[in-house]
Length: 444
Image 1 (cartoon, rainbow, N blue to C red):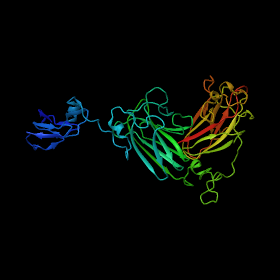
Image 2 (image 1 turned 60 degrees about the vertical axis):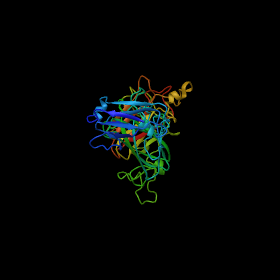
Image 3 (image 1 turned 135 degrees about the vertical axis):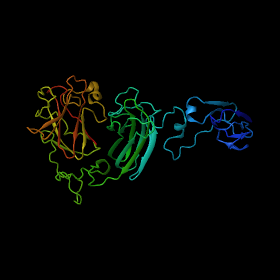
Image 4 (image 1 turned 180 degrees about the vertical axis):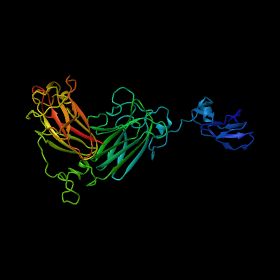
């Protein structure tokens, strides 16, 4: 039995962790023989460290002044118990969003610090609200809109989100919770530890982040990352809703829709009530050879890979030129007519293979210089018209140093604004044309 005299408790209320203290020889508000959590009177206390009559744990127990400002300034200490029982294990993590061990252990890595990530399961109509923190996490992954380098700075956590059925997934990140706020970024990807499978990324600066995507049933990964080395606490909300015909979203992945109602262009999509609503009518053009180009319908959240035998610049002619092409003497070109059903940024890329690798790296020493998958592309976009005096170039990319063979452009668009995209080269010779995958995404 330990019996201690407490001095100065009127200015520094005494609190001991783990063990109950019994007040003795006290005055004022304290009754002798009663047990108290905090003692703030000049008196004595006792507590039982006899293993025969009390539960005694091996290790240190903290004691401190219960005025937090005083505690923070050093009014605290500890006692070390030798020979007691092992400390209890954390309770089962049933019904909690953050494991107990993560919350109550100093510098513990959070659940989902690395792939495969903390598991989340969603059905249509279901929501998940998660509370987490990147403070104790490590920087394992990159996001193209936030943590863009492999330098260990922006800490991240990962969630493996399994959709039991297909639907429209909405993910919202609140990185301004009022405690340990930070500037976060949000990534939704098809592969956990790489962006090669195609990912969406949201970074609205100091505002909260949001992502939407039409997805088939399966597992996807959500990465909460920090911008410019930031870390802190967050809330993460996920909602899965059923696809609805006529909702303005091309639910290709979850419902097999080829299109959805486009009010300003009824030739593309039949209206609700039609026996073939939300189905393609005849395409205006399926050729990549010349304007008006191959039709591509894209909705906010879509991430399309356009490939196949028709998407090969080798048999094509040299009909067009981009302003960044540096002369474009003989480069063969393909044309795509992009129809965005909503506003956002049109993200277009060419130069990667079906696994997401740079095509010229994937084939390595076996790259075929004549009509193989490795060639140096030019990528440009026009608005107003496909060609002629009304055509206005909106973006153009070409790396004359050949340091990269992946071309990327980003074009802001409004709903139903036509955009024409050209896959081109600036010469006719080895590594100038071949089959390709055109990646088209519309980020809201």
